Image 1 (cartoon, rainbow, N blue to C red):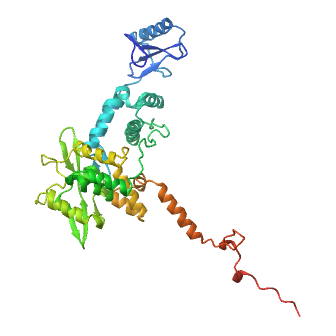
Image 2 (cartoon, rainbow, N blue to C red):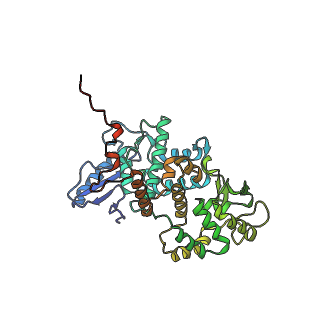
Image 3 (cartoon, rainbow, N blue to C red):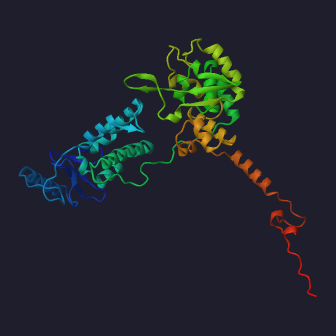
Length: 406
């Protein structure tokens, strides 16, 4: 029976026909690794005969891995090591968040263990990693980069612990990918149209996502006590975020990094909107959610999106995801003059590179910059010449004429 990759499953080994018409034979040896025949075969029968010979060597105890003298001990498998790594992994001294741990486990179970899980950790080679990468998540480049980065990190830890001599995950550029989705920021007019289409209880949620660059999980966990007035200004204390895990459902947790805990000043033009929302849509208790679901718990994304999608359609921006409002907020803050460090603090990022990913250049801004550059140059040419003033020699810089000697 032929598999999806074109290989024919046999009692021992597999055979597939290449585009050239020749046949390739592969098998899994006693070392739990996949091996290929050193050459391809003109016919399928030739490949079968080669596999029979290898099978006899294994049966009679005469087999050794290609290019290796003697047998290879199995030892610790990659799956065993990776599961232990995931259980004890620390990032800056803190254990992984439940949602992150679940995400890593899903990647391992679905995309790494099937090909590499049974291999002895010490036996994994660059060729193994390359073959795995070439066949994994080809149609999902972002998820593929995540899977490779996780594999590289686990093997890097194994190298640090001297479990393996060197990290075999050395594919240049495999851990990064160009963003597939990169929508321009919303304009103020588009933002007003989206907000107008939202129900009253969710309008402020869209405004805070854009003007304060807050994440969905942070917004859905905001409570009355997180909104304070300081010297006439409205300040949001971001302390937690809502996440969904398989075991616990939607629950509150602390941010992944310490930078996520922050104070965000609300632009003054939203003060009345915040005040009205607290009065009309938030329970009086200090721990009452700002944007609760109908059942009183955390708001689900689908509830918001049902209204948000109508809003973005009315604005002619069907490409604008809710998370892109955070991009809009970051871009507006940058245009307002925020330094990179200030932008990091407002967004809750630990690195400058993370903050930069949320900035977008827009054509109108480039026109404005061009006009400002022209103003800086202070071009005031004389009639009949286009020579800038800055390039002409000023009289005060001229050397005095030498006086004749007497």
